[in-house]
Length: 173
Image (cartoon, rainbow, N blue to C red; front, side):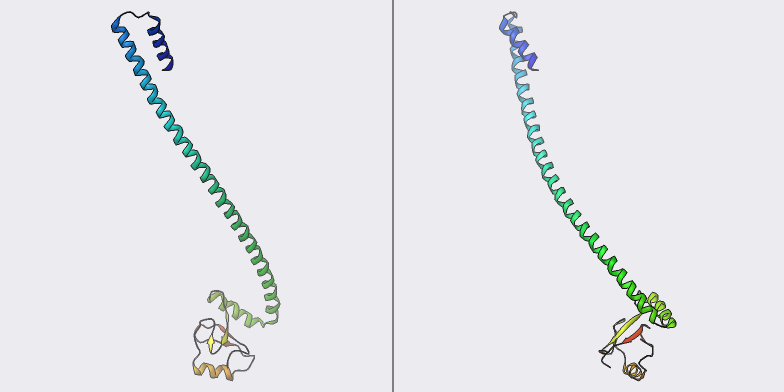
């Protein structure tokens, strides 16, 4: 378009066009081309501004993504460290459990395992202040009297949840 405008201007300036009608048409075309060029330059400027704004937004979002990714990586590292600690703790507890389980009579251990499966992982519960800590229900007076009268090595079970009751010095009985 610029080349055409320059060419038309040169034709106008050279004096090669002598017809007034052709001169007028040539001048109108030069004005029209200049207006069109101005409009296109405005469009180009607007597009460049929008592109610059978009680039700034891309930069901002890229930084935010990097920040979020760093936080996610940090959280994953902390999670992995916690899982490793849980695994170490579980291994220690498993070893301790094996030692204790070896000293428990086989029939009692079998009952405990059966109850543990039935009760969602807890086969025995502490008796504390007349309350079974497995089902959180308080024993009635008859059950309390039976617990008091039972020998120290007797296996007692909660009447409500059927878990093995573990008596301790602070049971409150």
